[in-house]
Length: 335
Image 1 (cartoon, helix red, strand yellow):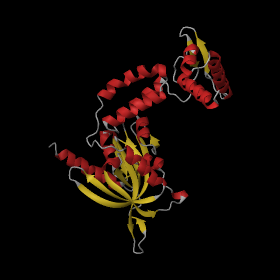
Image 2: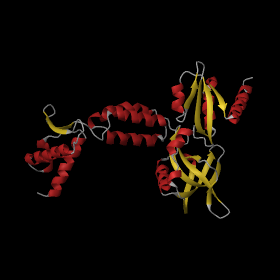
Image 3: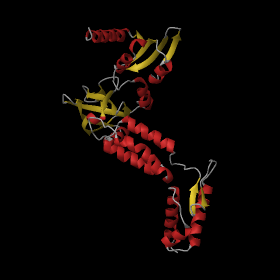
Image 4: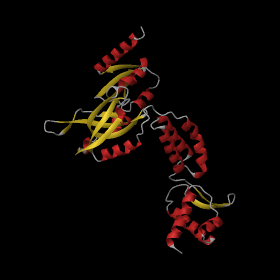
């Protein structure tokens, strides 16, 4: 017997068992043109493989004969496959993110479900997410970003300087050109963003950072990008940490790093600490909690305004004055 044909047959049987299918030994023999003893040897070989790779894990996979189904099935842990709870949780997160077009989200969810859910649960999971897929509302820009994410990720990995054209505001059609040092891709509040330092040539013709802090570009607004044939160097100790940046920025508004201190009189200090990962409680009394946090830029003002009268800025003084001016202008609209 041809060894390659035998190996392919065994692999075919193994894959279908992993998918949750029921295999009848007589039907398999007819399908492959061999006797039932050959199919039994295939099953025994798969059993030995599963036993050798079980290790210390609980609920190891086994091949058993199920009399009620009149065939062989695989039981035990699904390993790399996802449980119903996991696939539903991930699907809900993807749908709520609204990060993709309706066509994109449909393709992604179909692949996720068919590739990660055990065969026996496919219909149940598909039915549970089908209504939300149908009523999914895509964002107004309707731009496909998947391809940009991968290629920009490669540019970051290869430390290439890029020239981009960027639509600052879609409504006004203001297009600008920038030379950037791409740093990281971040997702927040419905959109994917590219963090990058804007660079300019100095008197020696070398590219230098224009600002000490990175700019933030919405990826769907990047109209074009190309390499300029130069790379940038990264000192490991000073490398950009997107996780640390993400802790300090609100609504993807860039700006200088600052130390914010405010009094909080609301009901849930925990919610504040969850929203601002760098926040820490300085002191507490029966009326208020004094909180300090390290934050970037202007986005924090938008969040502070959303908290109404439950927050009072203590410092920095310039932010306190800026918020006071914004509130005065807001109040004037309701006089």
